[in-house]
Image 1 (cartoon, rainbow over the protein chains, first blue to last red):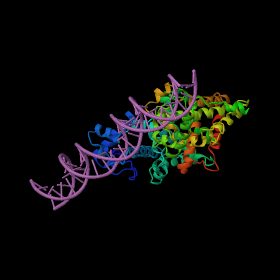
Image 2: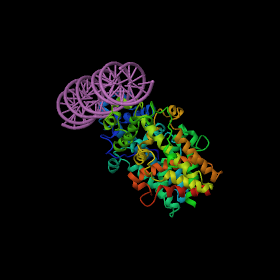
Image 3: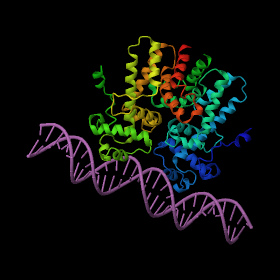
Length: 224
Length: 224
DNA sequence: GTTAAAATAATAGTAATACTATTATTTAAT
DNA sequence: ATTAAATAATAGTATTACTATTATTTTAAC
């Protein structure tokens, strides 16, 4: 079992990078410390020059892996959703009851992220902070349609579709399964953000989790 | 009546700007063409230099109104939510039935924006595109807590709270009114975005509107 | 173990950005 | 007519987001 797990690699479209960062030690260091640095100083303040200093490598070497910092953000975001998808599939594949399956899926998506020792060079907690605080910047650009056609967001879309199908499996007459699925996934990030920064406009806190909130929501909607 | 309406000014916190752009002709031109330019080229590509050229004024003059382009985004975002709040209050104040009031509120918030001739120098349609595509960048920053303390987002938060209270008025045992209110407001923007760019993960299109989707959602939740 | 190729690092350079500061000119107010 | 305020012009700085070239190190092949 452990052997099997160690062989897993989250596959990200090769159109996002110039050279696969998973293929070399330097590539892994770029991803590892890139995540930590963005989490630390924010995406706006993040530069390849600063990252180069951090890992004692050169700016120009980083440019051989990623065209620019935007692509780097797309890459780590894509990795994150690939990882979530893997967890989702793993956690639900053996469940036969549709409602139970859906509830498990919502748990996987809405629960705060914990460290995953399987991927040594990636700090999943730092990455999930980036997902909450920065990931929407990966698609809120003027180039979104082009990049979408190039498959930059396909892992994310596939995850939404999986959840959407699980919603339909429980109630196939519900008319908005895709919108609800996208609301759950994006809304989870938003509630996590509000909980940290705008506490007055969320009910989520130490006691009430986004999981409870969205489970209740889906329950009400899917039953009526 | 008309006279009354013309006197209305959406009030934005004076900590956001250096000099009130509503107070001069140049200030209004900055806001007017700033909105059009950001809608056109995107916030990342937008600079005060380009805006200066556009309005045949000088970069340095624009800096006398706004410290930087981030504050400009905060300003127009804040203006937008102030405008929405005004519409919300206007559209609901005379309704006595709580459920009807709530439904009207959801309509105001989720319906696509139409031009409002009351505010001559502001193109509300262009502005609402900016809200969908750029506004989250106004708070997804490392400075969010500081700026929040300075009141940069208070109009937005007040709007969410109003909706939250309307939800509670209809069903005061529902445990997540603030989270649901924030989900509706943020989710509306997200569904509008998906409808334009990621059509496969939303059910919203020419026939199905975010209004229907969210009305159905709230109906299910608030009744159970 | 040598050689060649590939990867990485160092250096330099460019255009644009995001400003600040100073001075000049225009407009408005007394 | 004078003064003050607003705007515009100009110049300058540090940083960013790169590209290009060359040098050095590492690895892989024979």
